Structure formats: C-alpha cells, structure tokens
Length: 452
Image (cartoon, rainbow, N blue to C red; front, side):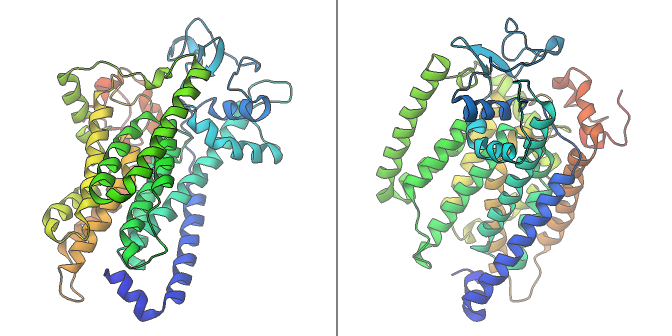
C-alpha cells in the first residue's frame, strides 16, 4: 500500500477527498489563467482546424470550399508554404479539406458550437474565414484543455504520493514542459493528443490500484476508445497504442480480448471514415515516409539533446526522473507500468526522429515530444514513490534538491516560449534544420541574444 493510501486511512477518506478537490480546482484555475494570459499564440499548423469544426457543425461536412479563404491556391496543395499559401489546406476527393488529422476538429466541435452561441466564430455570417474568431476559440480551448490535463496529472500522482508531492509534480509538469510552451499556445494536434494520453495514463494507474479500491477497475473498452481517438487526432499515437497493447497482453490478459475487439472495431470505422472523406484508406498525414538510419540518428540527436529542440535541454528535470528510475528500479511500485511508459517514449522517439521534418518545423522546443509528457510524468511519480520508500522516516532524498533546481530551470525555459514573441520570431531565420543544432543562439535564449 502506498504512503498516500496509508495517510488517507489515518486522516479519513472524506476529509482527504475534500482537500484533493479544492487543491485540484485551484490548480485548474491558476493553470487556466496563466495559459490564457500568456501572450504567444502559435497559430500555424492548427489554422483552419476550428473552421473545419464549424463546417462540420453547420454543413455536416469537412469541405471548406463554401468558405471564402484568402491566400489559398488549390494548385499548390497541402504543405506548400511559399507565397503566403494556406499550406494547411489541400484538395482531396474533389473537396477543400484541412490537411492535418481531422480528429482535432471533430473533438473541438462542441467548443466551437459553444463559442458560436457566445458570439464568436471562425467564420462570418456571410461565409468568410474569420482569423480573429479562429484565434479566440483556439486560445480559450487550448488553455482549458491543458488546465484540465494539469488536474488529471495531479490525480495520477495522488494514487502513489501525498497531496504536497502530487501538487509539486503536477504544477511542475504544467509549467515546466511543453504543456505551457506548446500545447496551450494553440490547438496543435498535440493538444488533444496529450490530454488523451493523460487520460490513458490515469486509467492505467487507476487499474493498478483496483486491489485497494474496487471502484477503480480498468475499463478495456473505454481504454481502447481513448487510444483510437488519440490516433484519429495524431498518428504518432501509434507509439502509445503499441506500448499499452503489450501491457494489456502481459498484465491484463483477461481483459485483452474486449480491448482488442474494441480497437479492431475502431480501426475499421477509421478506415471507412478516411475512405469517405479522402477517397482513400488514409489521409496524407497517415502515409508512412521512407527514411534512412542516418536520418534517424540525426533526428534522435535533434529531438533529445539539440539546443533548440532537445527534450532534455528544454526539460532538464527529466534527467532526475531517469536517475530516480535507474537508482530505485528494484523498488519501483509497478515496473510493468514503468516499462510501458519507457516503451511508449522510445517508440515515439523513433517515429518522430525518422520523420523527414524531424526538427518539427515552426514551433518552440521539442514539440514532437509533447505527447510523451504524461508518460514521463508517470515515471516521475513511480520514481519519487520508490525514492521516498527507500528512506528512513523524515529523511530528504538528495536527488530531490537537484530535482527542484532543475524543475525551476525547466519552468523558466518553457516560460520563454509562452511569454516572449522573440522565441517565435527565432523561427524566421532559415534553414531551421541547421539552426536547431546551433549552440550560439538557442531558441529559449532568443529574448536576450539577438538573431544573426
């Protein structure tokens, strides 16, 4: 039994639940306000995703041809950035469609409908694209979803840790990672993806706790559904799907059959959906691209340790997380979950580093590793629990001091991406695939080091 559970027994479950609810609510409010007031808006790939949701709501179609969209040249096609072209759009199956995965637009449709009721819309009454309306909806929705994710991570930590430690870890994840600097800046495809990944992690942790709380059983059909939605939002979710599927086979064998059947049904539905919308069994974004071992190694170096895209550069607190995992591996409360998290992270690293645009385009920091944050968070919770359990009562683990310092540094680094437009302007100097390796001007130092 975890120390958090024993503490709950001593204090009384109802009283602890009241504290959890109040602290979780306060965390949501603070995170939402900070995310909403942070000025930088990274409206690039996500542009027109809310307009697509508007088309789905009002015209029951993803076709944007009925809207007046400036700077869209059908001859250029999806992905052509030059000449100010609306590169996010393309012509598929005779229709003008948003070229990135449509899952973001589908899941965001209720928010777009609510915004419309409140007088804000990504389209004007006469069918013109409204950039202002698109920006407002994306900014509010991204801030709301990421504040909700902060609460979900807080609940994940509470399964193994006390309230104080859980709050520190959840707040650190909210402000010291891409949650603040990327996912809350606009409706990137990673925004829904990281939220759903957080839900998956929560379900797995709750499933492991079912022996002590019978009401928190794992739900294989719901788990498969959330994973399917992740894939509909972003194909790199295949990394999490693979890791969780292995976990279900090894750890939850009796629940694997309903999980697999549900996943198979969703796979068939998605194939039919893509066939109907795109005229093919997969959209452009889901078609694998050829790569080479040399590109993969170069991409890994970029996404792990480069000065402007490296996950361990922008989130140095993760170094302590990995140290705690290695140092206390034998004491980990659940090594199966740890292996699942490490597997998901490793698979994601290979997928995004093998992608031809491995430097993630115009963004801030390790955008391609955004969806790995909940998995890293799970490792942090397990590592801290093991470290605390290894100490005599009231002792302080030396790694915690380093963790606090590096967490503060992580927050400072990610704050620049959300608060300073100069970090966004840093992307204006090409070629980015070369600049991301330049230590003379890291992106997070753009507010203080003039571009050259």
